[in-house]
Picture 1 (tube, rainbow, N blue to C red):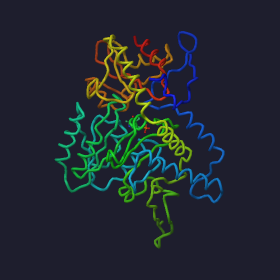
Picture 2 (cartoon, rainbow, N blue to C red; picture 1 turned 135 degrees about the horizontal axis):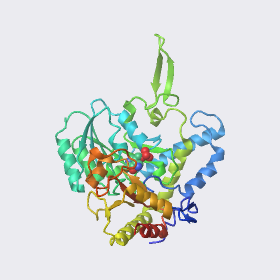
Picture 3 (spheres, helix red, strand yellow; picture 1 turned 30 degrees about the horizontal axis):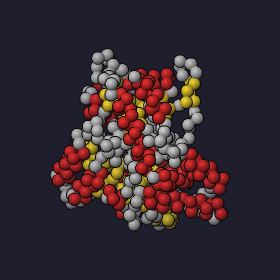
Picture 4 (tube, rainbow, N blue to C red; picture 1 turned 90 degrees about the vertical axis):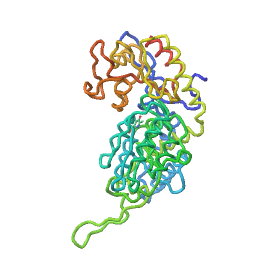
Length: 423
Ligand code: PMP
């Protein structure tokens, strides 16, 4: 495997950070699962467009028209990237969290929602106004499908239902059997939304082939900057729902009612849920990242990540204190994400030492997936506090974990340094 994913250079390769031991070192960003550095290409595209942007949809000026074209083209690029079906809608949001909250706000009345306890909180929590069935953590992809099938078989067959599932876990990196889960959902008359926050940066996602009704992802994990996300998929529930935000852009016609109130006719398309001035640069950046990944192809990225995962596991195999976390087994297929605990260490202190002494950026904590991490650690839910850094008393089980994650810009040297630091 090449030493970095050559077709996809990222920003930040020259950043140096101070060490507590003195001197400076090139920063090793091993936290792609939280936010990936932007691609150089995305940055260049945005810089080239920045002098020309104007307000979209409503301006008569040349730059407004140009921006409107670029914004709507960005929508088409994302639709192609996700291999959407004819009639699917692409709504630009702020993030995956925002996308799933938008869908939650658009659920039909009496919708039942099925979600595994293993989900990221962004996928676990937005369904507050629905009847939620939270499913036990499965211990294999097969068990995931069987658990879902059992739950759906017992549901009210006439009401609407939605399954929300991740494509790749942000904790273990493990791939979920999305196609099979979608087939199970549809066999029972339910719909399915794919949380592709961790999948889309590592694998091609085809809404058509996977047969998922919606896909959500975040720009900042897909090598674009913060602040933009996507919800793409079936138009009907989105069209039937009240606008996510009320305001200009979402409304087609507004007037006064006879009784003195305000009357409004909302747009049917994506604009219905994009009230206010949209994040045009953000959408443009996401589209640029989609194009860059498509043009480079995912093959070299996947090969590189698999090489790095193998390297970490092999090189740490002789450190018995290191325990990697997995739901489906150590050899289960995964994206470039590994979580682990180190016996005798508080994970937060360990992560802080990696940063202060080696210039390595990882994440520690419960990764906004409290039920999953607790299941994986076998720890007592009552004894835990915030997502941040719960303390384990000496001799107690770890209460949180460390996550290392890779992507297009991860050179071998970062992984080498990480392994040396852990050892
Ligand atoms: N789902 C998964 C699987 C994630 O990893 C994340 C981010 N950690 C999210 C959803 C939420 O993404 P965002 O913070 O960009 O809304």
